[in-house]
Length: 79
Image (cartoon, rainbow, N blue to C red; front, side):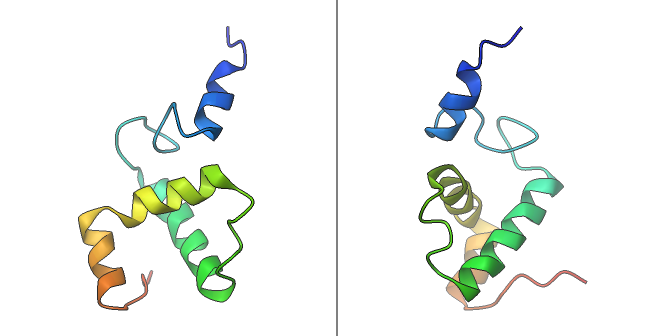
């Protein structure tokens, strides 16, 4: 039974690093990252009031293969 402390630790940067699995991103995490990344491209301040989502986006963007896309200026393309 949860006492609610896990959700507060997740929003403050503790707890799970990703949505579905605590230690590695799932396909769903990449989908969420894609949406957030595109929102940031349109409105760079859109995550300013959501530290947990902002931290998630930064974690996903720091994955080497994803970071490489950002370094070259390419956007993630999903076909």
